[in-house]
Every structure is written in C-alpha cells, then in structure tokens.
Image 1 (cartoon, rainbow, N blue to C red):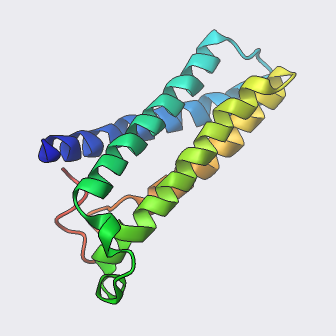
Image 2 (cartoon, helix red, strand yellow; image 1 turned 135 degrees about the horizontal axis):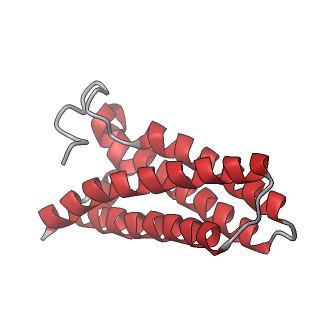
Length: 150
C-alpha cells in the first residue's frame, strides 16, 4: 500500500505542475487581456488548490509512515543530503508552497475586481510553483538518482 501511495504521490506531481502552469498562464493572460474572472477561472484555481492539498495529504502519509519524521533530531540524518532533504527540507518547503497556493485561490476569491483576482492568482501561484520546482526530488540532483521518477 505504501508503494501505491508513493507512486500516486509521484504521478500527482505532474497534475499539480500542469494545473499550476495553466492557472498562472490564464491568470496572466486574463490580467493583461482585461477579461472578466469567470467560473472557469474560479474552478481552475479551486482544482489547483485541491490537487495541492491532496498532494500534501499523500506526502504526510509517506512522511510519517516511512519514518522521515523520526529523523528530525538526528545529527547523522542532518549530515546526509538525501535524509535531510526528505526529513526536513522537502516537507517544510512543500508545506509553505501549499499554503501560498491556498492563499492564491482564497485571496483571488475575495478580491473585489477581476484584475485583482487574476493578479493575486498569478502572484501567489507563481511563488508557490517556484518553491515546488525547487523542492521536487528531481533525478538530476546529486544523490537523488533513485528518486523522482516513480
């Protein structure tokens, strides 16, 4: 079961990245094009936020069931690049990215005018995407050859 969750977590990463990119592109085009913020824009932001939250839940399931959380205070784990990444860096940065993505959807929903809705989505989703891209265990990172393409 744990392997299935890990595969789902790895596959859902691509859904999150595609939704984030699509939301950012549509937000910037809506902002510059002066179009109205419609139901499709709202739903795209909502689905992006849902995918982020689902990815977070799967990540927490892996984090606690694989024992990464128990390595937090270990000097040996903090000295090893891969162990430190999975026990601390990945979890903290992805949690921050999900919070910022949630802000992108929530603040755009509450904005008064359409341009502000698009701008808030574009800004918060872009920051979140940069953090996500920096925190994915890509296989080209030293020590991560076995991770990333589950």
